[in-house]
Length: 137
Length: 131
Image (cartoon, rainbow over all chains, first blue to last red; front, side):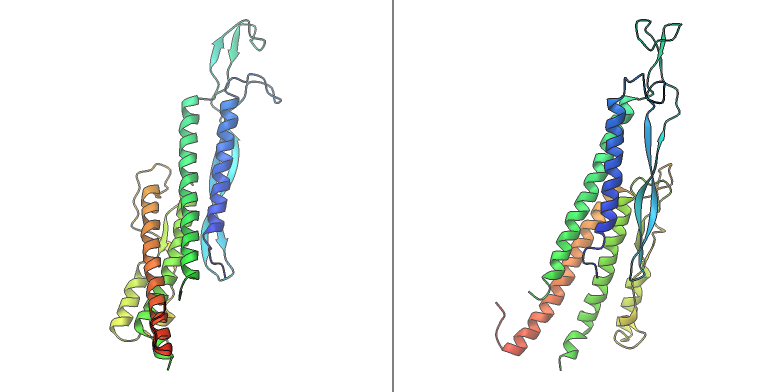
């Protein structure tokens, strides 16, 4: 018997949103990185989610969420004329990372809101479990 | 002698509705977790559960075998949810949070009903109002 059964779904959701926040942080931190281990400028990373069927011992199912993958955004980066830059090409152009700060901020806020929504569910589920324990009191 | 108290219509209904409420809480957890999963469709407790329960109460088959007591709520896809989102997901965060609040109130009410029934039984046994 699981008194707070919805919590395992919420835990997965919090992990998924946390991963997304981490990737947003990584994207913002590397908004100006023109040199990476793989060569070339930093490429913006995108997190995608997928559902996963959660089958319980009592036979009921629910859909939880998992990070499907972290993939690079293939959009080409902006070309900036800056001949003094060590990573400038022979024509003086530097390819900057394809990170758009406005997109990242929107992602940051959305992920934070989703994280908060799941947290408030955790609180609510705990309250209900408490109510169950108080039956008869 | 105790049977009529624990198998009264109110008690059976409260128990069944609490099952549904606990299951709905799971569905809401699932919906909130998948707020941003493309193609996800919102889940809810199947709407015919409450209707069947009501019907069995009205026909007096709540406690008979195969009647209301054997009804089990189930999670299904919510066919009434509409969405304008391009990713095919029809979960709306505000809607889910409100559904969660509503469900909490419903559940709390049901636990109170059960508690009240048990208190009545205690009162009958002891002859005193439980403190």
